[in-house]
Amino acid sequence: MSWSIQRCSASEHRAIGLVINDASKAYHKVIPADCWKSPYMSEAELEAEVADGVLFWGLSVRGALVGVMGLQHRDGVDLIRHSYVCRSWQGQGIGTALLEEVERYSEAQILVGTWADATWAIGFYQMNGYRLLDNRQKSELLGQYWQIPARQARASVVLTKTRLR
Image (cartoon, rainbow, N blue to C red):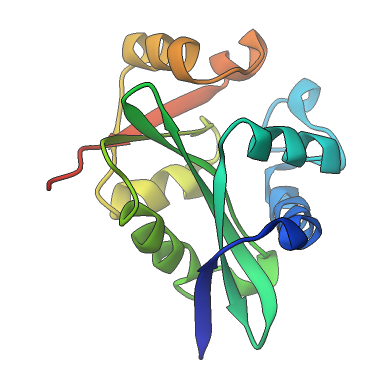
């Protein structure tokens, strides 16, 4: 399969949203029901994330965006944000390719948060060298680097990877 990875531009925000909202359907009935919404990420929420410094990379196959991943530099750490691959393209190495590309732009320790019951996401990051943090560390880091509701924080985990430069 021939693909390309590029930093996403403002003109691709609609396509980014389509990828996120397709891939997020895997979380339906896995995450707490009171945390689920459809669409999972609205256009306004995506624009707010970009305005807050999330830089997106996208993987395209034959010109169609099928995977996205964001990176946000925040107070001495780098956060992986909004990592999604369209459901019909999952399991083909797209997430790993995006992660490797995004990691090239990391300047510090990398943190990623995900839902505690999304075992496939946790396993993906662990297979790529990330370590699951304990509940105390998770709570501290979520409070320090993320702006999420308390309910979501309780249902989440944080993984980390230290960059070797």
